[in-house]
Image (cartoon, rainbow, N blue to C red):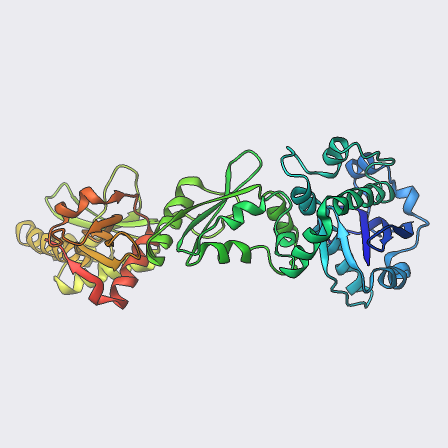
Length: 443
């Protein structure tokens, strides 16, 4: 027993929008056995562009019943039936949300005729309702009205049933309808082709542009997890609608996947990535000689063409490090711009003082160090290697077992060099501290 449904709404997400029209076609698997259709007062203004598309105006719905007045009847018609719609999650999310607001809990099995049509009629260029109706010569009256679109979807459903549709439907329902939870524009085959390995995945929009980058220990499981649940928020619904394809890059380990994700977010700047898009390495400790011959240390914002002694994301971290250098090497706070009260007579001789500054800088760089992190790769009898040079991330790659690991110059030809950033630097440093047995200091 099926309920084939179409709705018209004031917007694209349930929270903050209303239903303006609903049509329900009751189908017993062989033929249509009933029909329900009504305008609904959404209690939200209908935007002009929506009125232009559907022909439903604010005046038309002014005297229509609000959803809560028809909710019980809608719930009764849908109860104990498989819920069917073209791009099912849109209609489902609206109806579930508004039924819940009216006091009815409803969790049906679902089928998406867009996904079913892809199985029954492979090879079409597009599967939107208008396109597939034209391709299959389905006559649609009252397009973009709930009744006309529901009737057209019912005809499409009948045609799917005639194309071994019962088997397709059984397969969908047997697998808990995993296909129907996917975004309507994302081909199921692309998700099926995802491996169960660590890596980085990329969601693309209709023009092929990357709109989101993510990392995963298990690529297939992580990608599918984006589409589970019923988050009806505007941003998530917009995000899902804009996913048209997914690509991926396998990585040998979880750590290399985390690093590549950070690199790719900085490179591609995807629309829907929020974290890691703030400026990194915002501050630096710089060294310079003043007009009196003193080597000075100072904290300043990162500058494009000047290399700092050390970089920091937070000003407090830079201050903490510089004060430690002052105390450990007996530097003068005023010559490091940490004390504005000292006079020129308090300063030591430049030659002796500069020796202490040079020692402090060298000590800091030695603490940063040059080292490699090695992890066993699950394939090719190679090791995943991450190289840190003078405290900065250099690059990563796979290297043979028999390579000389003691010198960075022997390793570099086997690595891909990537731009460093504060996220990667912190990530790698933290990993090295937690797994010292996997760290090898380099010459």
